[in-house]
Amino acid sequence: MKLTWPAQLTWPAGLPQPNFLWPQFLWLLLLLPLLVLLYVWLQRRKKKLAVRYASLAIVKEAAGRPGWRRHVPPLLMLAALTALILASARPVAVVALPSNQQTIILAMDVSGSMRATDVEPNRLVAAQNAAKAFLKDLPRDVKVGVVAFAGSAQVAQLPTLNRDDLVTAIDRFQLQRATATGNAIVISLATLFPNAGIELQQLSFDRARAMGRSLDQAPPTAKEFIPVPPGSFTSAAIIMLTDGQRTTGVDPVEAAKMAADRGVKVYTVGIGTVDGETIGFEGWSMRVRLDEETLKAIAQKTAAEYYYAGTAQDLQKVYQNLSSRLTLEKKETEVSALFALAGALLALLAGGLSMWWFNRVL
Image 1 (cartoon, helix red, strand yellow):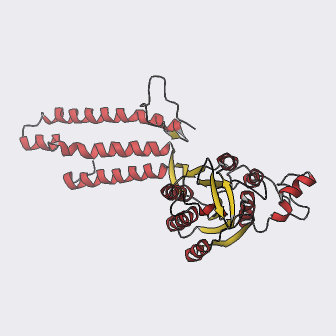
Image 2: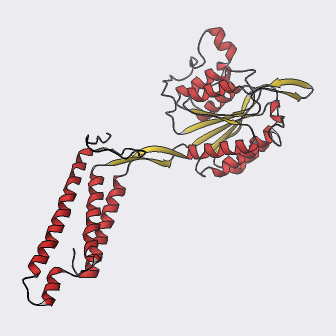
Image 3: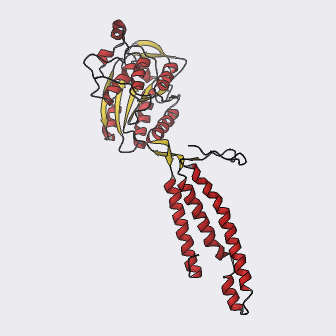
């Protein structure tokens, strides 16, 4: 629960209000001023008793050694008690921890429009270079798979820890016609869940609409499927990079619903010209434009994010950002152990200094 401060106390503006699981223990902090007053009273009482002795040596012994050092151990012990009281209240904080995501699918567009040179040296090469740099930044225990899509989608490399195999698969990309972004999501899901009965042939756009059922409805032979909250499956994620809009295949928004129902986040990366550009490919002339609305809808539906990369440098930054987001995630974590450790170290330091300087413990 969140600490509720008394009406007469105000928390400094601009600082996050602390959270404690057991805030009632914070009332023990009121004992600290009493301990300070007790310490001051004992020091004054010691001086009053010292004046009764005639011998100056006895007076010094009773009053204690002069100087600031005699106050250091008590102050350290007071700090130790403060840390231990805070630890007893079980503080929690939002910290960045290693993510438990173990598999990432890179779904990359290899349609003819990726030969455009508005992103130097061209969109495909820039995407390949950024993807390979992304692999270098990932922890070695994260599996990565590669799905290439154009008019159809196919697995270029099954999820693996071998970065060399992944680089080889990315370097083998061949440009093709058309763009099937929905197919890329479905094939990526089938790769993540090989035993779930996800088959693209049974989920084609035309057949699903003709039979009057949604794309997420399982075929009669598939296992019973129970949807989960979007983004709740934290063991895998999909990153889809494309420069065009869907021209064939499964509706990408329907495919995104499949991913959302399985809790898988689909991060979308748009590359190229938003307004559109005419591209020549194998004697064909076609005008392509980036369908940002659909890519944003896919990311939003799956509780992920959309990124736009207009240049090769932007694309590199996007992948760097994704690498940090997928390998580190912010979680509200109890940090009582840190306060308890600090309290124990301060107490040991107070006792050690007291023994060193005065041959006694406080």
